[in-house]
Amino acid sequence: MASSCNVVAILVMGLVSQGFCCSLEDIVIGTVRTGVEIQGKPEWKVTVTNNSKCAQHELRVTCQGFQTVEAVDPSIFKQEGDKCLVNHGNALNGFGSVSFSYPFIMFPSSSVVEDC
Image 1 (tube, rainbow, N blue to C red):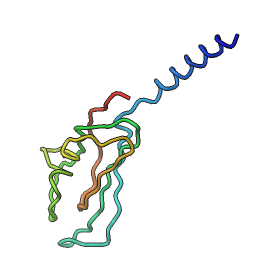
Image 2: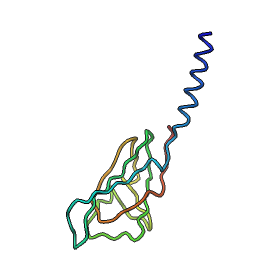
Image 3: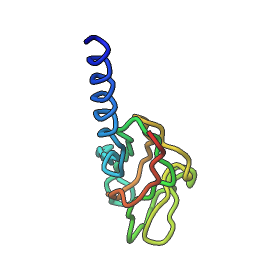
C-alpha cells in the first residue's frame, strides 16, 4: 500500500510541476518617477523584472517612437526599430531584474523562454 501511495504522490508532483511553465507574462516592467526633469520631461526609473524561475533571453519591449534626451547604455536597452532589446539579449535570470533611467513607458513584446 505504501508503494502505491508513493507512485501516486510522484505522479501528482510531476503534474503539478508541469503546470508552472514560464512565459512572457512573467516579465513585469515597473516605472517610478525619479523627480528629475530632463529638458522639461520627467525622468522615470524603469525596472524590467523576470518574475519566474526560468531565465529569459532575447527579451524585447515595444518602444515605438523611442526618442531620448538622455543617453541609455545600449548594453541595457538598445533600439531595434519599433522594439528595444533588453540586457543586450543576455539572459535575465529567474527573479532577476535590470534597471535604467529614461523618460518613456514601454511594454514587453517578446522573449525566448528557457526550459524549466
